[in-house]
Image 1 (tube, rainbow, N blue to C red):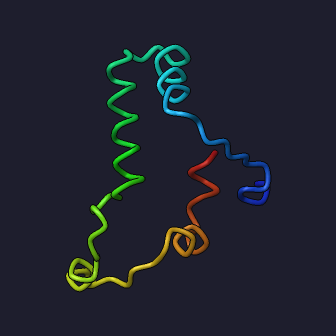
Image 2: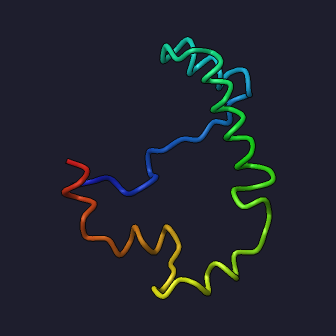
Length: 84
């Protein structure tokens, strides 16, 4: 079946220049587009996707039960078929 999620995963933080180079030279992306993607990623890191604002007001608008990504992944029965 599938290996345990994350068991073979490795994480390595790229420098900003390594990230741009990997996209531009490694994937053939125009450098200005690679730079734009870098800047988008930096915005997600700080100040964050919602600029550090509380999501309490938004959560009150949602009728469904909210769950974490891990809860969703563990509860999903579709992963096996979708990954094939």
